[in-house]
Amino acid sequence: MIHIAHLTKQIPGGPKVLDDISFRADEGEFIAVKGASGSGKSMLLRCLSLQVSWTSGKYTFEGKEIPTQSLLGKFKIRKQVAYLEEKPTLYPGKTALKNVLIGSAAQTTLVRRVTGMVRNDDYMGAMDMLEKMGLLDKAHQRGDKLSGGEKQRVAIAQALVHGAHVLLADEPVSGLDPHSAEAVLRDLKALCKQQGVIVIAVLHQGDWAERFADRIIGLNKGKIVLQVNGRRLTEREKMLL
Ligand SMILES: Nc1ncnc2c1ncn2[C@@H]1O[C@H](COP(=O)(O)OP(=O)(O)OP(=O)(O)O)[C@@H](O)[C@H]1O
Image (cartoon, rainbow, N blue to C red; front, side):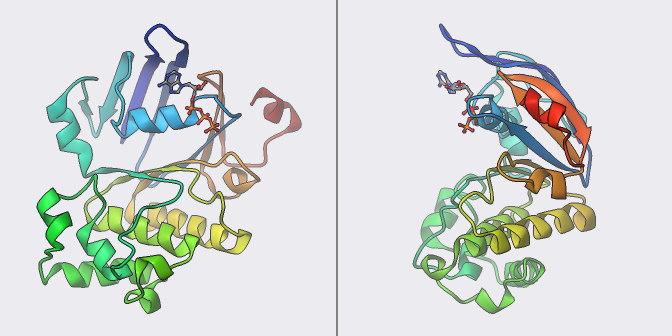
């Protein structure tokens, strides 16, 4: 469970880009974040993934508060909270399976990334996860030969195999064709429901948030202006974003 209370991010000598943000995310929840360009969506995900520190407020992860500057706190949740980029960076010359096994830069040690060393018993877990993501037939295809949607699903499998309980995804389906976008979001939703993973995804474009999220959080100028259960937003609600 994630609990954020009064989180604020002030850029030194600049604007307050997150202003008094409070919400909680429970196991198995799919939360979509919407808001216009510059409203603070990416900054929120970067704070939650500990890439940047926040100025004030409380961030509690599975019952333990993470102090904003704590290296130990970061280390402890580094594997459990995965940040998925809009365009995942895979090792182009390595297969989907090998990419899953080696893991993302944020989740695995440098030795393992450089040598590509994996334990034999990890293979089964990686193949299982690729199967769950509908990619069993692509397991031996090179990273650079996968489509955008397939790369995104490999990145999700990678994060989960290496212990992520929370996936923070910044525009995970922008740039994908509607069919691939739908497949990625369907897989993410299934992971929430079947494995209790928490997904917090920036889904500003189109109606993906309305169709897939359990809850929609709307940001405007760094503030939460909308928090509703996943459903079609009214015209009035859309005007708030
Ligand atoms: N390091 C920084 N220094 C100053 N301002 C920053 C910095 N990082 C972000 N900002 C500002 O914070 C605000 C929120 O940025 P953020 O990237 O979170 O927006 P966003 O909602 O994700 O936008 P987009 O949809 O365009 O990606 C923006 O006004 C941005 O200019």
